[in-house]
Image 1: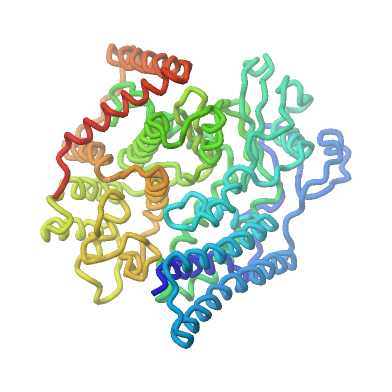
Image 2: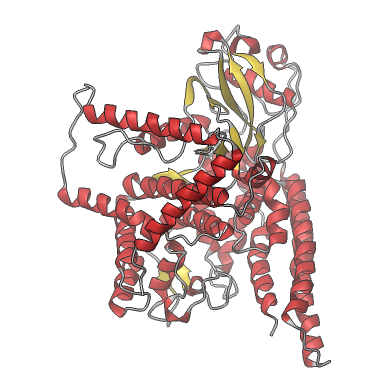
Length: 602
């Protein structure tokens, strides 16, 4: 009837829940829920409150009488929520209004609009809604900027008007003045008697990126701290914790009574509860530095820990002497975030449809798939905030991953069951074989996924395929692949285990990228070899062998291979454009020939 209407309506059902958090307010203060309200520096360094303007002579001498943003009061939170409500209701209502208008034109006036005419109507509607949402999020930011990041990464799900309007929230939020940035650094990082110049001999006023929680500046360390060495300095926004945690508390309050709502495609209460846990840890940069090192260490060793391997992506390392709760100094990665990659390709004269671009797309998907596959299945500890602003395209053509403020540790049992799901999905005879579907479905239920009463028998298997196999053409049971479709298997979910919420977020990011790049991609097929290795090691129950501290020959070989690979990659990026294009075309043909040799499932 109106094919595009279904998509727009489903879109606004989800956005209405995400954006109208202002229906409810919690009376419990942030201080009682989250602990200390006033900022304080690391215990080993000078400690200065960054709550508001202070008349303290000690603080004035260090921060130069800089005014730091105050935390929100109860009345300010009320105004903030009311602003969202006043913006969200008209957007949602406009979609209902457009639906009514089209129904009247069809049923009462006998008009029969073509698909092209419908598309024009809904494109205009999407444009108006996207501009309104972008304007509201620009004004209030907070947790809603996180929502914008998710929408901007899902070109497969949301109309391009929403994706384009919200893409700037991945790394281009309004930056803090550099005076406040330096004031935070002085208050948090300086030892007694130190000056700013004792640490940094260069510090760029213009930020590399500005996000929800923090912004990042390029700097050069002094000799005292191992310089001259280029570094990235991440500085937390003052008073941001109360804003974000207040937003998520409101979302939890409004989503709880809507857990059983038929119109909503997911149990958002569970999703927001899990996000609240993760957000609470994002304000501690010491914990982020530990997580960064932990994931780096896991990815540069084989699954059994016996040898050095090449990490699938570049991960920055923290400067251990310069890490505090709200300031983190780390390696500087030269490149651009994925959100700006297309413009960078255009600047370099690379055709987005060329073999070179397609080869890079496969490299991107392969790197992210391996990073999340190994992290989730091998250790269960992974980066939990993947979006285009946290993924970098480096100058040498490699992929970088930044911002480890949100990480997740899943249980050993969940990790092992996920591995079994990947193997079952990869080894199935077909998408309709009853025994395969039962096996996959039973494993999905073992993960803790619950379904509504009287759903189709294929529902558990269909959800697993939807989440982990983007290459499947038709889901079993006649379900649709689009999660906002009324016939999506996601709509038959009763609850989704909190342990897997962020696993799902990672898989959906990769799924969205593969759709945007028009490259069919099955996480299950890519993760299956990792899963088999993990299950094999688990079944052998081998005791962990301690290293004798000596240099192993296999480690030397592994390091040599990494060095050679980097040299070849760096050399290829410096080739003249015509030669580089021919090399890329040849490599792509070889890859595609290898893929065709794999026997596809019937």
